[in-house]
Length: 214
Image 1 (cartoon, rainbow, N blue to C red):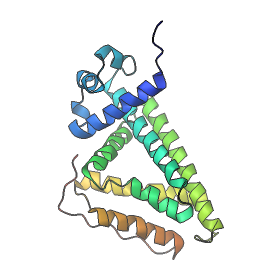
Image 2: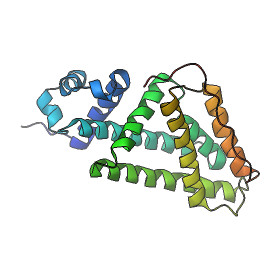
Image 3: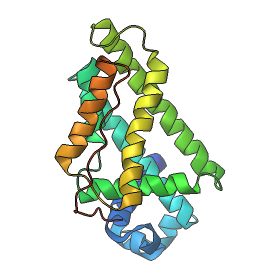
Image 4: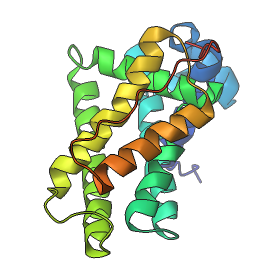
């Protein structure tokens, strides 16, 4: 009897291997042969799911997005409102070399979105999910009296994601990684902006001399 393969699960498993391999080697150095070796399968098994380097990059990005979704779901079982928002934002900071490399993979996806419709659509869907998730937490925080009611939940969610993306861009462009404490302060400053004076602007994290691996 032929073996039944769960292709969605296999795609995700390959995406995980690809993401960690890219984090170690860099996206440009990950070959089909190296991915097959790390996944303990044949090159033919890899090419069943992906046919180009862009598709490997997209597969890794899909894994990172799904992993973020599952971590967010776990956080929401323990926290709500601003506490949940803070934990989710902290969990997606590039505070160490591995997380910085994962952020780099997503940055490369952004850079290819203008020329690859599949990547553009995947990123759009990911952002829609993130906007909806944070919008829910904004509404929870408003119901709990943690945030003022005049804030528009969807617009606030979009601003929050743009703010966090700005930190990733800052690190990627400057090649300097703020310390973990500075990154946490970056999140806390933004939470204070939402909960406090709407005219206050968050402080920009100081760049340390420690370089993030690109």
